[in-house]
Image (cartoon, rainbow, N blue to C red; front, side, top):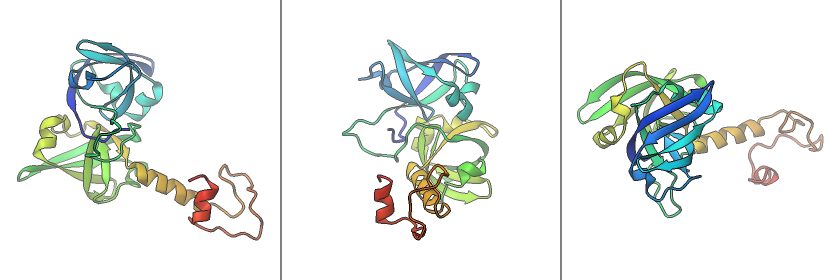
Length: 230
């Protein structure tokens, strides 16, 4: 679990892909503190498992699903990336709950400065947009951001100076892809609503359930939550 508060800018030292999987080596310093093999580090919002540690960085495996869902396959040696260690049990949630599991990518449409802040407009497909709400949270390239506005196929965030200085966000340009992770709570709510709205007599996997014929679809109730172990 992460918070979307970037700790350090790392630099890709090497990315070696064979087909759609491989390994990535990232130069870093701060995120190495207390890190051991097997720990998780978010690289541009992607949760990666550390397989080896060097004095000046770490190496992680990259699987095909990660390449399909994220912009990592388009990165190259020398590119800067946002880094965050997994949240410590006694840490603070300075951002929001972030799993490090990317839902997909968005495309930067434009930047617009407003006094000390920069408005960033991002285009995304409907699957991602369906879970984005104004004043809700979005994780973009590993950065916890508040959604400032939502339109048809796009959303906007307003970037404060500190975020601009500590991350790669304002180094990007129109047309660049960014990794997006929807709010975790929103995804669970969507799942619960889809379960409660299924047809009468239909089970979770589309098969007949053991519900009695006379029972009606109840919506989300305490009994419903208990039934599915929530």
